[in-house]
Image (tube, rainbow, N blue to C red):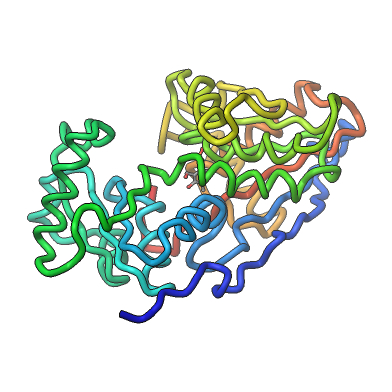
Length: 319
Ligand SMILES: Cc1ncc(COP(=O)(O)O)c(C=O)c1O
């Protein structure tokens, strides 16, 4: 077997650029909007995918990686691309056994083209995947499918969305890059792993009065605060940094949108030549513009919006 390369061999653009944006909707309130361009870190593994995955891949040390996702998962695609670029095996456990008998959609086809072995499971199994017995059974099945390959104990498992303690440590570096450069650093949240690390990194080594982290959940449900805290405890044994959530910009839930949000995203894209990823980044920017209009940030605030990803190429339907 060839020795797999480590992620640093991929020449990421780090620290990611921090760009000042002139936008009247912010400047007329005395707020300085900055874009933290994590979307530019790496072509195939952009944004928070890079931040979360690379510490996991370092820990995997070339072992095959198994992870989970839906039929349009950006996370699965990033893991598959990393496997191809760095030379390790990847297994994607995909939600929905009905998909096994259909042609692969664009996203899963790309995972397969990158060498990812796809294993489809029914929704009940998928929901129970954190149960150690269910996970053990999945590992037994996938390793038996690839006969002569690795055993269950040789496989490195990364949770759905890539959020675990290692990922939170990876995202803390994002916070450290912003420390002293922003008063508020804001990020869109799915699992909350990026916010958990961002907040910790912003605060590291600072006394009270340092930068604050603001999370904009894109899912409906109000469960995220507990999850961010759980991830911080897993990573640092304690809550870390000054963070809070504003839970009113999900626009109806994951992958839901409104005409207003669509119009805002298209307009922002045009004004600032920024490709706006619609499921997370659009909601973040829309939320920040609204909060600024409402006078949430005092004049003089340096407000950094973390651009955690970019839109998929045309003809693609990634969510
Ligand atoms: C582009 C983008 N931004 C933000 C997030 C949310 O990240 P997290 O799940 O760490 O909250 C995701 C999901 O991974 C994403 O794909």
